[in-house]
Image 1 (spheres, one colour):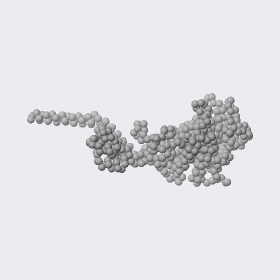
Image 2 (tube, rainbow, N blue to C red):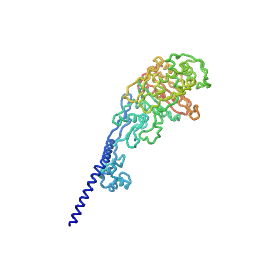
Image 3 (cartoon, rainbow, N blue to C red):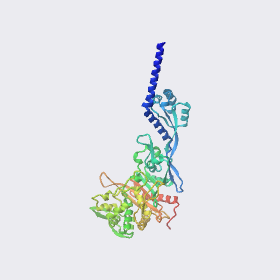
Image 4 (spheres, rainbow, N blue to C red):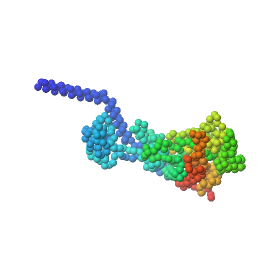
Length: 528
């Protein structure tokens, strides 16, 4: 009896000692460990409950449309530390969640794991089945996922929400989702200047153009010149942010602000504007076009190989004569010409509120061994590399009377003047020259409206063999009404199966310009 009593006393104290050790071990030695686990779970719960701000486009009437929003769904997860019978729970849940019973049991037995996902997006039937089981440690959480109701629309502008480098925290990747990730994550909405209807039309026209001429891609930008507000910005190929994992990473880059190219003859407008502002040429200044000019042992020819004789600077834009642009640049002077290019915003970012804008390049004119022919070819857009946003913004400076604005896409921004580039008089003169070029070709002309613009067929450098390849870039930049411009449109396509921009981007410009004029109810300014 005494022995049994002694054994019970000993067992009591041993049990007490073990219990005391366990309390000490868990509450003191592993206090930080469990504190971190609890904090992690709290953070996760907070993450699930947080509603990301929406992104809105507008329309001509000021109505807002959500183009990036949140959709609710339910997720089922387990907290193994709370599960009383891991094997039994696994047996009940396996047919509901569609997971292997043995793997579930093993996961449930890992009591140090505070979170184990079971169903990402559960159906109503699955939720009811789980809840009917009433198992301790099995939870249903209302969650959200990012949804883009218009699929591919403005995907380069929007970007998408994915996982960060540690693969566990949703974050904005590319576009506005990335640029304004902090505000959106704090449940603030983002209102953009993009017109949802104009964006849709721009993407439709661009898509048709790329398909018809089998181009590898393209870009359309519509800017309000007086403010710098971007009304539409589209590029192809694009992507569906709802299923971004199905696309190559290169599709996520925004060509409108991140790709550079040599613009070709659209740059002749910049050359003429510079000469007019400096006072070294007028629209009626003449020179003798012999069809070609020799510089530094090389020959520059007109695109059509023709010699037009004595022609004016206005005729230079009408005929798109390379030699006329060379003449104008020679009157301006190399140093002045480079300064004007910089004043127009080339060689610097525009400051548009989109991520990772590319600066372009004026390296061909800034290197120590620059030659006279380098400035000559730059006069008609060969050598300097620009971005589409730089080019449309430079044309917007002309359309706004000579003032360069900072382009912007967030409606909360205010119009900001960068600098005056040319005089109002020079802007009016070059606009008249551009009008004449449009009327001469007729392809971009719109009944009832004065339209100013210039086409360009640009060569693509061959970096492997040197010189230029046979592949081309077509672009057109124009604005209307020319008497009081309300919008500037740039249309560009890459490597089309057509030799002439007049057959590709110019008709597309006219179609988009007509839509824009009608959409905004812009009054005609031309008497037929």
